[in-house]
Amino acid sequence: MAEKVVVYTHPDCGYSDALKADLDSGGVEYDEVNLALHPEQWAKVEELTGGGRTTPVTVEGELVTVGYGGFG
Image 1 (cartoon, rainbow, N blue to C red):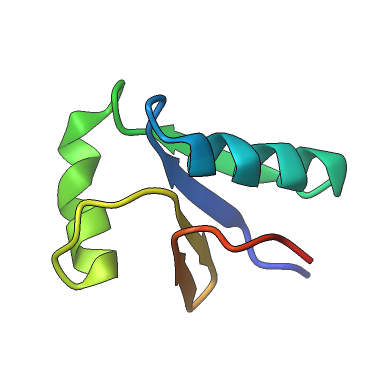
Image 2: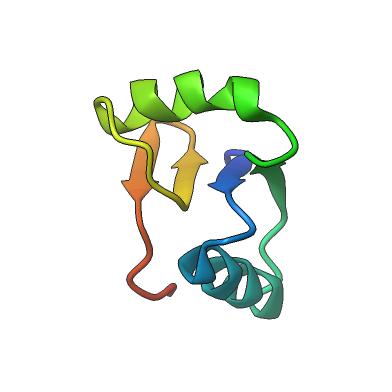
C-alpha cells in the first residue's frame, strides 16, 4: 500500500500551485494543508525543513521533499 502523501502549501506560492497541478494530473491522491488556513501547522513545516518557512513541503511516509522541481 502506498504511503499517504501530505502537501503543505501556501496560496501565495506559485510552486505550491504547480505541484498540486502535477499531482492532480498524475492522479496522485494527497492531503493538502493550506498554511493560510492552518497557521498553527507552520511549526510542523519548520520541523520538517530544519527551521525554514518555505512551501511546498511534500511528505510521503519518511520521505520529505522541500520545494518543487517537477514531478515524476
